[in-house]
Image (cartoon, rainbow, N blue to C red; front, side, top):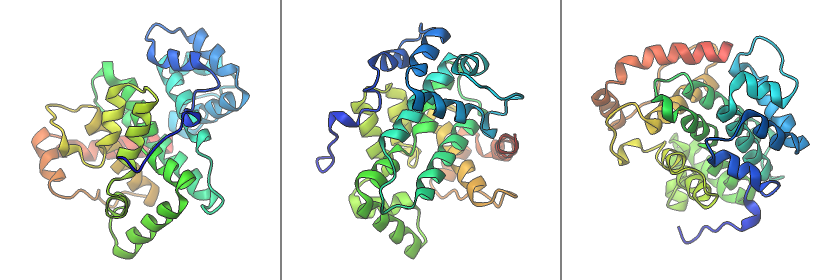
Length: 269
């Protein structure tokens, strides 16, 4: 990907290297994470906004990061903190409507919430949710740093009735999935997250033997897009060959109706 370069200032964790270490360290405590996040007012505000959104379905309003960490757990808070910084480091370009940026954030939150309900291995659940939160970070980068390419891809997708990532592949030779994965790899994000994001539009490029993180984010993304477009009711997932055959081979096709119900319930939460 020689045409694409990322300067060090784009790293979302420059304000606190300790947060980067916390993301990687499984022994980091809730108190430590809350303290790190609490040092940055903007990050704290964004984390609390995410925690109190309908996607997490908490029974009462959470007003501080410590309580948020207690309710949702250390790993979830670390993931939310990382995601909030990733969105902040790529502000909307003046040529891109602010509503586009906001819809990306809502879609990321919804995809993560849905991914958290899917039957992925417990030991990988938190990394799967992180991948779901960050799966479209490549789109944020394009919208913020390469708005002309972003708008061109949008126009191609609309004119031809194709998927956005297909338009990006035609225009750029790659898509936001690979761009986002490349960026996160440079940032030192765990390999499982990077791989999951890279393949979330082309999951058949890598082998699968069970309902792994890539399968979960692929399915969660489809369900989230369906709810984004049709919040009042499902209309059927757009799954093309060979993905449909692949899902059948994994035994996932028969579970899609149940997953859709879970996604709808989570959205209503």
